[in-house]
Image (cartoon, rainbow, N blue to C red; front, side, top):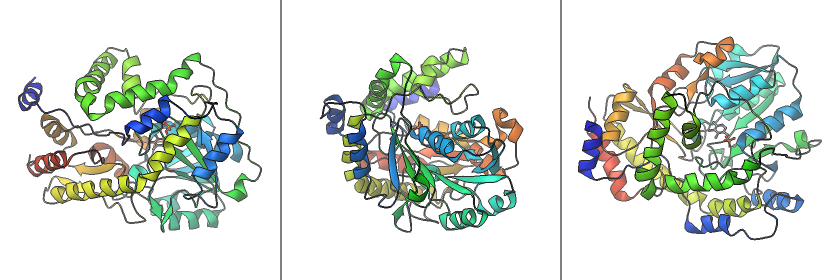
Length: 422
Ligand SMILES: *Cc1c(COP(=O)(O)O)cnc(C)c1O
């Protein structure tokens, strides 16, 4: 109550933690698509690979219904033996771990490097066994992982390498887009990612490995799936700053309240749970990658460089404010490559106190972006001790740093952080 009053008094709309950097032309591309076919055919697959030639001159690129399908198709192509082990960072998106388990594979949780949030290569080397078939590396928050060490390790052990680049479009390893070293990589163009085409994703594959790979023909089963992009369009719309405070934020609160009473539909709609014990991957759930997504992506790729530049600039300003605060600790985003600024994370000694303080000042943040999966009840069979991943789960807070923040908003964030000393 007190919290609400303070906000009302300030009459300040809430700054969302994430906002898609879309322009009205992007919405137009969606609403008035050029070309006849709205679903993908051979022709648009070609258009798709052409679009990605700059980022991936040597790899094959395939459009997929959403990022996770890339991993699914890759695993189907690999045909690993049941029970084979996959080395994966414990601080992760539970869906990815679920998919490994669903495929009959055994996730072996590896701790993370706390400064870059990606797999700790020393722990990875300790956990390799004769059953290891793959390393799944995530460029968490868009922060490049130690690809030289990981790639060398996979070559030495003759195991596959998969890169989760869902956050890492525009992040580079030795000046090249991450994802180019792996046998397979996934990219996501969902509504919360650095480019948003209201769904869709990409599978990137090394040519030698893609030689006898055929992109599966995608069939989706639900008639409701036709509205998939439209729903994502609506969620994007009501998440934009002018609508966020008055529509999205109350909807999220209502969704949370209903979820507490066991009604999870609304919550899962506006803010899907980050630890859903009932999740299983069903390939018929999402509609196919659509034609309009390619032109929408092209527009966003054309300004990705300036988008990233601004994100990094804002992150640097915010990190300067964080530095003198003894309860807050920044990450080191550029240790193994160049970060794209897609998610700005900060460690807070008391995460909840910091989040509450920010909220009172009209700044949203996210206190539970991902979890230490090695500690989740749903993966208890694979439990491991990963103290750095546990620390990230308990202390990491995500802050807003998207390009559409105004100078005034950035200043407000900086001043607010500067005043945090509880
Ligand atoms: C978003 C995301 C994915 C893929 O998500 P889709 O919703 O299937 O596009 C994979 N890994 C991480 C870490 C993600 O954040």
